[in-house]
Image 1 (spheres, rainbow, N blue to C red):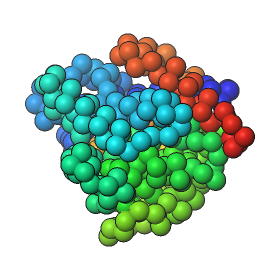
Image 2: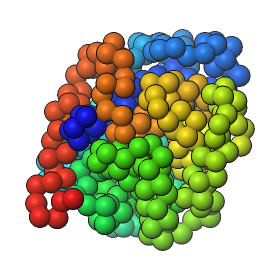
Image 3: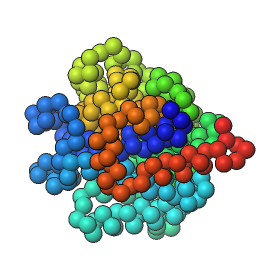
Image 4: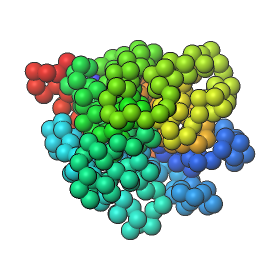
Length: 333
């Protein structure tokens, strides 16, 4: 595997996990088991689903679309993102989605921050209450493009503060970005998780304080909690103890717990994450991004890759461009 292949694996893993979790998001684990038994591949959105009703099997959600949006802004800005430009792009994306009749719109923290910044609130204040997982779900492109491990937390903060400028949200985003970067640069899932924990501890001191459990500590705990368990048992433990809500301190540790339970098979990891319930499209997207970075494109079934390619995202070109940013000057490593 080349680093470019691993970078592509990160974006495809994100999209595959997201698409697998599209029909199961917001459902309980019991509802998922009743409808699907054990997920084996892409499913259409159930007709009674509050967000995904009528969506074809393999459709992506905001997790992938906003990661792609951020990635393209990074490429266009040669590695940097202007906060106001980002806010405007987020608002334009939601408007376009609403015009198409989609119910898959901006999350609560992002919506609140975008409204504030477009009304004139300074970028570092707009996201002062953003503590949900919106920053972590879209951060994989930053992990690919970051020029060095030493500057990664700064890169995460710069790309996240406009909507999620709290220690909890930044810690979750830094954990995912650092793990993706580590995977692209050759780390195993276990090594990438360690890098993610270190970055989460560093990022927790950034941004505004909000009450909540420490993300780094919960990632460590969650990984140990599922070690050596069968997948079904691990899923039940993640659902009942770690948590699968959109709270960063639940969903990010849940993603790393999935990786600890299934470290060697990204496709199975995504299927497991998508079967959890709750915000499982986001959990599967984060787990898929890290697993894909560690294992590369060959770890995913070719038919699944073809389904994602059919949506016109041009992920291969985007991944290559993002990786080019990571080594285009003397600060790269």
